[in-house]
Image (cartoon, rainbow, N blue to C red; front, side, top):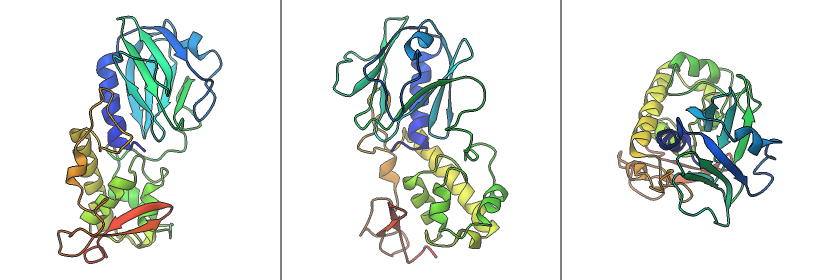
Length: 267
């Protein structure tokens, strides 16, 4: 699933192509993705100009000139392609025709993505979300969220109510950099360790954004390019490899996902 850096990369690409352009036409090839499309979505989008594109957690928020907001989530395998030359792919579900003659296509083989339209500051998919890790979020905030939780620290950080957008790849890397075991109870993590986690999570996400996101098999930027951050992974998908400390990277299942860590240096 695309994580925060991947979505930030997509946001940057869409912003360069979409902002200031008017939607001349919309072609919905099916009635739904994960959820049904809003009634009259095509009618409500046509004629609207895109004035800004924001990100909240892993959601793209496309601001329109009439105050409406188009919400897009890429799900497991969704992607937007700008300046598309072909919109007849098997999994091309949404096509936007812009006033400069360009075509943008949303493709999603697994159809776990979301496309919705709303107004105001509240949406059922956004209201429960925790703080953004790259904005005003500090060790005190993290410690407060962890203090009453006995769940493993890795599971806690994956919880979008604790902090948003830090997916499986990046939490594995952050815990390794901080020498923290992924199985440690959350309420046992010290304020000093919270400070280290906040610093390393921010660093890792910033590095990944700069590199263009990670090259997950289903992820590509809006121009079709792949990022290069995987080459910097220290433990993720490195089972059996040497850790920098001299130990061996191991893998185990945790919360239905693969956890990669080094038992020698992560305590």
